[in-house]
Length: 116
Image (cartoon, rainbow, N blue to C red):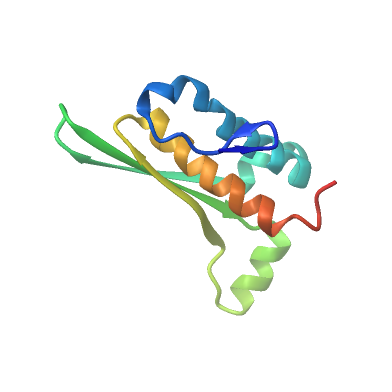
């Protein structure tokens, strides 16, 4: 599925080489929103299940709040990390790419009114 110039989701692992577009798109979107401080607004978590010969990797991408949002949310007892994407695959790259694709779609939808 294409969303703009980005490959959003590819289900076949043999296309993993083409899937770096999701991570790139997510990074570009976050740079539009947060400038050069992208790293402070994104957190990845990974889990490996299965055997070493047949693993399944799951990646979860979280968007973290700005300092001021964090102060507000902490004051009201709310969590500062929001899960935006989750993806699984037989290798780290494809799982992370799938999670990035889900996060990219979610954030584009959520921030549609803020983007040019």
